[in-house]
Length: 168
Image (cartoon, rainbow, N blue to C red; front, side):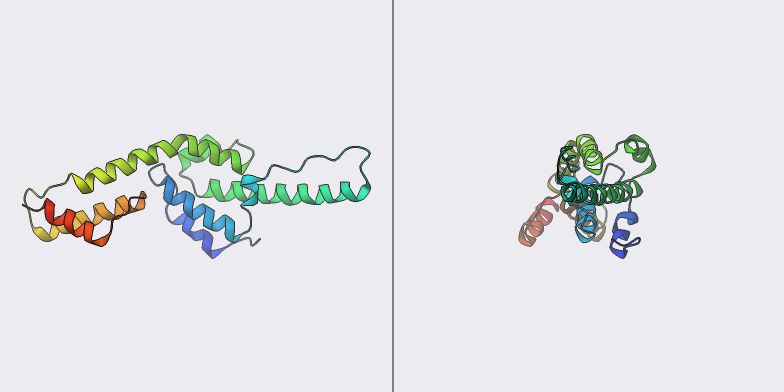
């Protein structure tokens, strides 16, 4: 695990502020996979072996526990460093990276759906009512991009049809 990863800069380019949750989570997944830390999100801390377990088992447990704890600290740091300040305060006391993501999922997964609906409405319900065609087309392109950022996928022909349909 490197102390600084150029790939991790994708997390710092735009901190997660609640409006970009899906994109942020995708970027976080990329970084954690690259750093080989994503196991912390799906694997609980290793269980303590029994008192009468062989010394080799106890030593292996200690190594696995230290590896998990070190990875968990790194995951928590990646998450906290890539959040807007007001969100950092809300999750900073959560002890595991997995629990942090569960908390953020609860806060923003449904709002992500709402944001997708808003972006989709901006694409399908917008009609040119004045101004230049060029400015309107640029605005619609931005709407398509925003909808795409929220997971809405349009074929190129459909985009053209929607744009032409929205012109007077």
